[in-house]
Structures are given as structure tokens and as C-alpha cells.
Amino acid sequence: MTTEPISPTPVRRSNNHLVPRPNEGVWPGLATPPRAPGKARIAEVLFRQAVRPLPVRVVFPGGERIGAGGPDSPVMRIVRPEAFFHRLGAGSKIGFGESYMVGDWTTTELADLLAPFAAKMATLIPPVLQRIGRRFAEARQPSEEVNTVEGSRENIHRHYDLSNDLFATFLDETMSYSAGWFADGSDDLVLAQERKIDGILDMAGVGPDSHVLEIGTGWGGLATRAAQRGARVTTLTISAEQAKLAEQRLDAAGVADRVQVLLRDYREAQGSYDAVVSVEMIEAVGVAYWPTYFAALDRLLKPGGKVGLQSITMPHDRMLVSQNDYTWISKYVFPGGVIPSVEAIEQNLRDHTGLRIAERRSLGPDYARTLAHWRRTFLERWETVAGLGFDETFRRMWEFYLAYCEAGFRVGYLDVYQLSLQHHRSY
Image (cartoon, rainbow, N blue to C red):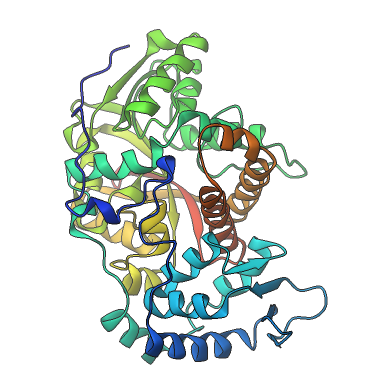
């Protein structure tokens, strides 16, 4: 097993002072609410209008309540209304998440509260106002976070290199950071992750003597499983921290001699493989590079081979209107990330490859359960995480991230698919 060198220092944005650095406790501009009186008044009107029909209860200081929720519905307590509406007015969806991070509002159960908002995401704000907001108020993706080869390395560095120990704290023993696939009657996350990995390997036709290319190593769980099937694996990552731990885990599993870990971008990949597997990596590619990504899958796959692709997806109409938005998730969790639709995947396959979807499996409800496991474990082990140097703002940020995603999968605003791609003349 060999590791190739990578650029020693990830490229930093020119306005680096605006970039959060969660592992250092650096939260630029977060402590002081923005001042946007006009926008704050508009935000309050729209928020009240959006909440009234939802099955939640929003409680203000002094006892005012809005929302259609009954006594058992989730409660959102607005602790600092002025700060909350100024953040919401100045930053829309970014402001909503930031206000939770700093405690402007709290709730009895975060995912339960966010789910009704997610279910009505397309209609919470009237469409005309959504279009106006996107034109004049919504932030756009910074040019420095576009997924060029160098930009991708910086974007990945900001998330996956936070700390291997952090991820080990809340993930299961397989260190899988993607949707599990639960068997009927089982809530065992380890078994669900092993089943997920086996499912995507089966879709790619991976067996003894297969030479497999994995795009997105993670921490080596899939490469280990493929090697245990008798396959040879070349796995690519652009996270130095992930590569280091993956190598250790592969060695501990006794399969290091069958797996080559390369610090290499998918655009730089060479060779020809019996199977190509990529699990929840396409979300980090970016719309402009989807043609390049799918063309690479086609180029690297031998005739008659199969691709196993696992992708988070969203409805096509929502993807089209939001693909250039700079959201809370973009700013704090996945810079440069864009979730595709199934239609966008199919269109890129038709336009840029000879590949087509031959088989598909939805795991959306399973991802909601997976995220619930992660969030519960993260909160239960917070003292361990804090011992790694992460602060209370990070705790609320990470909790919001996991709950926000869980809510999206719960209500079907988000889905995740395992797809078997084959050359269209092969089936």
C-alpha cells in the first residue's frame, strides 16, 4: 500500500477571516447580531406567517405563542427575539442556523421541530418572495469554494480533517459516514452499515479477483469489505487525515496488501477497472464538474464493468432553484457541496457517458435513522468531544447539522439512492 504526496498546505480563501474554523473555536462575526432593521421586520412577518399553520408551538418571552401544534408538539422558544429576527433578516437560512448556534432560540427536540419546516420547505415563503429573496438577499457560493482541484482539497480539508477522533466518537465501529441500510426489525447500526456496503458492492459486481476503484476512501470501511471479498482495491481520497487513519485500519484488518490508498483527485485517476464504487462523494463535486465526474466514471470502467454509486438526492425542481445558494450547510459544514437530483444524474449520464442506471435502491428513511443514531451518540459523548478541544458553539452547530439533515430525510425532502450504472448496451 502506497500513499502519494499532496499539496502540503490547502489553499486558503483570500478573505480567510470570514471562514469559520470550528476545530479552533473561530466563529467570525457570530457573537454580534447583524443590524438590519428593515429586513428584520420583513423576516418577522414572514416567519410568523410561515409558522402559523405548522404543527409546532413557537413561544416568545412574555408568553405569546404561535403555531398550530397541540400540547405534544415540539416547542421552539425564542430567547432573544430581536437578535433572532435580525439574523433571519440579514442571513435568511444561514441566520436561522446561526441563531440556534448562539442560543437565540432553543427547542425541546430539534429534529422533531425542524421536520415540519422541512416538509413545507418549498412553500414556507410565497414563491414570488422566494424569487425576490434569491435575487437580492440570498448569499451566493463564494468563488473560492468552487470545486477546482485545489478548491476541492480546501473544501474537503475544512470538514473531513476536523479530527479523526471527533468522527470516531459518534460513528459506529465501521467508521461509515453515509446512510446505513437497516434490515427489517433491526436497529443495529453496525449491521446496517455492513449491509449498505455489501449492497453497493453487489451493485458494482465486486467479487474475488475484481480490481476495484473507490472514489472517496472515507476511513477505509468499504475498501476493507471489498478486500475481504478477495478484490484488489485502489482507493482515492484528498483528505490526508482520512488517508492516514484508513491505512491504519486496513492494516489492522489484515487487508493492507490488497488495498492501495492514493491521495489523488478523481480527475487525476488513471487505469481501467472491473468496478468503480463511489459512496456519497458526488455531493462534493459541484454542478460545474458533474460532467467531468461522470465522464471519469465512464473512462475508468472496463467494458462490461459496473459502477456502484450512492448519492444523496433532492427533488429536481428544488435543486434547480437552490443549486447556487450559499446556505448554512455550505458555510459551516460542507463548503462547495451541492446535492443532485436523480434527473440531473440521468441527464449527465446521457450527455457525457455511455452509462445508464440499471438498478436503483432508495435508502431515505434509513438515512433518517442513521442520523438519529449519530446525533444521539454525539450528544451522549459530548464530554469526550469537548476533551478534543471543541467548544459549546461547535456542539450546537453539529447538533443542528445532524438534526437538520435527519429532518430532511424524515419528510422526504431529501433521499439517498444506491445506483448500479452500466454501459447501456450491457443490459
